Length: 292
Ligand code: SAM
Image (cartoon, rainbow, N blue to C red; front, side):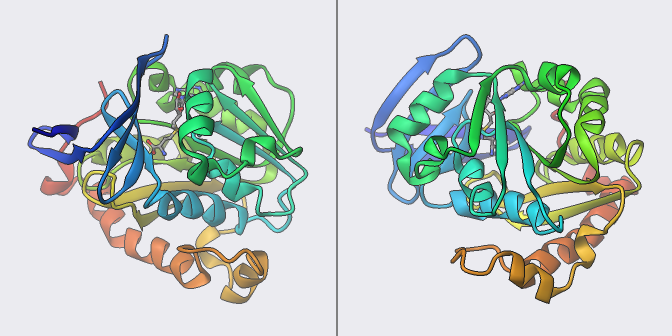
């Protein structure tokens, strides 16, 4: 008899995965950490019963979050990642000629487990001399650090436990203090289908601090509903309006598996109508409330 993992994102909807083997199962001081296998997705990192990343589809999410933002900046040198303990986002950032990447992850156990069980996801990123890992609360880091960053990426889980504060005005005030004037901020902003209130909240937190806010929609098969939003903010250039030529030059030689200039434009284009409905509070867009 097989065990099943159920990732419930809202009342009335969940994604369920049959578990092959359980490679790790432990409660850290912050969360319940599991690494399990599934016939379709390979090894899966699961935190508090929510799928974080899998060997099979990690690149859909990590390439999208990294390259939508980094390609929107003319010359990203200093990058900050909040969360991202599996190392998949760090791996993608390091494909660019950045000088320094600071990754602030609250739970050292997630990094240790990802290095041990998910080498196909982090691919040696933690060993790159340009990468500096800080075990800290991202909320505290952005409030207390003095450094400015060209690109900030927030790769957080859903708003619960230690991640709850990553969806607060204080945290976004800290992000504003840390983002360089021509910088690009990109955050994981949840499911447009089941977390409309979360997306609205994040967009409002950004719109009250930056003049340009753009949401993109990308495919992440193992995130419930398969459609996921990433929201970007800048003080200047519109990340959706960069030419395919410039985008192509930014990723030349990277041999990516999902992101491309065409995907970059399509991700913002697809989002426009969906976000308009959510902002207008269309009935079906009110489904699902994940904010406590
Ligand atoms: N891509 C995933 C998603 O979209 O849900 C997130 C992946 S990553 C594993 C999320 C990381 O955020 C976890 O390792 C967790 O420990 C970390 N995290 C949660 N709250 C945090 C905080 N306040 N500061 C820093 N890291 C935090």
